[in-house]
Image (cartoon, rainbow, N blue to C red; front, side, top):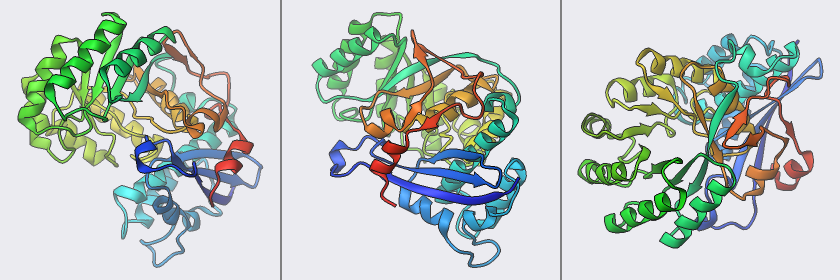
Length: 373
């Protein structure tokens, strides 16, 4: 089998201003075609046009080459070798950042091809299924008012979610308001629902320490990205001095960044985004870095159903996976791009082990409706 084409498809919802954007307003879909008619799909979580350029750029020289040029004519099931070829071929402008973001989408598509070729689900091809059901948490931006926060929490609980996360928005502006928000959320859902807070880099160390104590009183399961992602010393002090679990890592790419978060930052839970860290191949390496250190992994997945599917297979195929992010955004890209998606029921998703590859189908009408180029 040979790769005949690599498409980088930019999708965007028109006429949105910055305040309406929650991360699902645009995306870059990767489609890899083969001479045997098997097509794999992946997704990149980055600035879509920057990542698209990484895919489509012509070769400048041997270590400054676009991914499409590196892949045409290659055997798509040689995933590890192709990952290394892409990494080495982009060293001059890559190693982290947009180059690894673009490699991520390609890598996910290659795993989809491998599963379809072997007529097996991706999680089995990655080494086996540790978890056939995974708790899925409702993931949403924190609303501006206390009443809205309580109403949203109650709504998600009624939909069957046994875990939910609120992030960014007004968090960090006023400590008393933040406490009132979490108090209202906890009262709305009771004590049996896991509640997580994504602070969105809101505080310095002292502010994070104060709020960690507050959130602990309301049974928050984890506090995510409370300090700047570069503040490794702050992460370490916070994780060492708090009883609440500290989580982070969605902004990182490559396993070396996660090794630093684990060994120097002392994070309790790491959150690799498979559409950003280097795909399923690098994601598994990261997961075992955490496994060796007895830490948990919950993939970040605030995009379309493509990333949700990849994250589900990933969490199923690692020994320290137990939960996935399930965006409740009303964005048509988040809701409608994938027509055959991962099943959610009673707070859990079931890994689609009866379907080959990622086990999803793209709705071509939706893709063409939002396709920019």
